[in-house]
Length: 77
Image 1 (cartoon, helix red, strand yellow):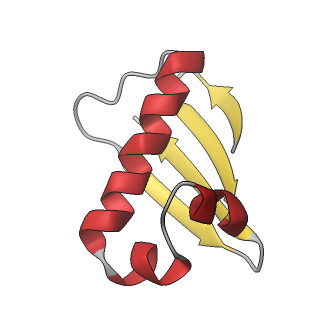
Image 2 (tube, rainbow, N blue to C red):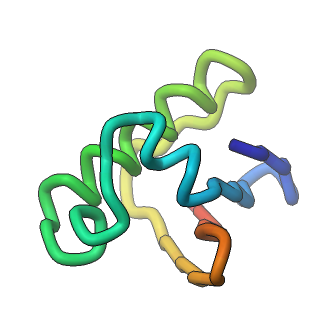
């Protein structure tokens, strides 16, 4: 997973479908099973917090762009 700190309030994450599968999820699970998709998202945020503190308390905005190779996820607090 690639992590880019855009600014104080925004992160850009990129994760490939291979990385998603390595984490124990399938592409279909994260798209059609809301609980699995949310679990993957929070796992990713936990990983970010071990590398670079990013508090997601309170409202957040999440934008996901899907491509052939993976997902770009932009998180703004």
